Amino acid sequence: MINHNYEKLQGSYLFSETAKRAAAFQQAHPDRRLIRLGIGDVTLPLAPAVTDAMHRAVDEMGREKTFRGYAPEQGYEFLRSVIAEKDYRARGCHISADEIFISDGAKCDCGNIQEIFSGDVTVAVCDPVYPVYLDTNVMAGRTGDYSPETGRYGGVTYMPCTLENGFLPRIPEKMPELVYLCFPNNPTGAAISKGELQKWVDAANESGSILLYDAAYEAYITEEGIPHSIYECEGAKTCAIEFRSFSKNAGFTGVRLGFTVVPEELVREGVSLRQLWFRRQGTKYNGTPYIVQRAGEAVYTPDGQRQIRAQIGYYMENAAVIREGLLACGYEASGGVNSPYIWMKTPDGLTSWEFFDRLLNEAGVIGTPGSGFGPSGEGYFRLTAFGNRENTLEAVERIRKM
Ligand code: PLP
Image 1 (tube, rainbow, N blue to C red):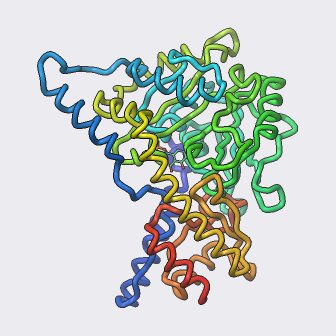
Image 2 (cartoon, protein in one colour):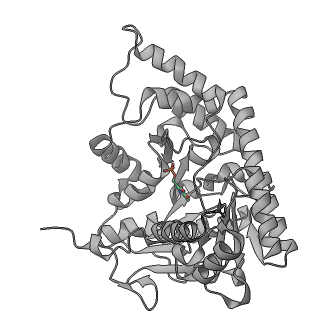
Image 3 (cartoon, rainbow, N blue to C red):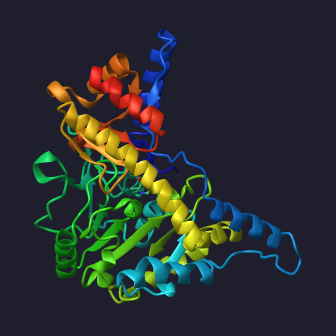
């Protein structure tokens, strides 16, 4: 009667276990002030351009003449067209408003997209990576059981991303039908160059595979030559779906707004994937509130851009503090240049959890064990730039004294 695939899931062990260990430590040492550099959530408030737009939209909703009911299932045209223009056409990508689907965030879209594919479609994921791609395929029954020995589910292609390959997965010899890619990556912070991404696009077009490209962190890209969208690559419209979010660039984690691009050209077995996604969203999705979509539109105004750029700049200065601080202490650290995540190798051959305990006990700093993001994350550790400056500086100073 029930879906037993859900029982295969390993649950939210990672964040509950870090919270449990931190709470136990705090209880034993009530005088120690803990600094949390493990959080993946933003901390700065919404930009004034955004809250102003929300206030205006609230007032419109409270007047008979300007009240709006159900939002269009694909999202309001005013938001889709500004996205098409500013996020895509301005970067030379030929994406139209019709190919953009507004949603309540990238997590939902990354998790739901697998519903338009068959039950036996083959799947590849980066290892380590944001767990939603894998977990939703586990829930859909596309994998075997979890093996505690290997840390892997059966029937899935894991693409290791380690120091040895610069945290960029190797293209599988036989491409699975669905390949999830995430750049800049959570948790490694690695970014992919346009040339390297083009190789994936070419491989997918050759094999007929579909790339599911999560660009939730594109706003953190600072280096030239790093694509903000997969559609900057030639031929991507016939093989790629892209996910975007307003969470990390504009602080919408609690407001909820994102979008997915499903190009017109994406056709398999004679069926348009855009049509399938349209049907899926029309049937199962309630739409994103007008107020939130107006807030999203405000992100693209000159004031909105200036304000969110300042916030991203603040986080990226934190990232530089952490990254340079770790490197100066002799740790191996990467990321933090095109992403808010810094990924470090644990010292002295410690496991990720052993290092978590050392950092907690000796520095009072909480991070996230890399092994929680996949078996190839063992021996790594993630720190994030979303704290405030004072805490970030102090955390690095404490790590230096360890
Ligand atoms: N994609 C990645 C790679 C993430 O790390 C996250 C959140 O941490 C999300 C998507 C979730 O985005 P949203 O808040 O839009 O659901």
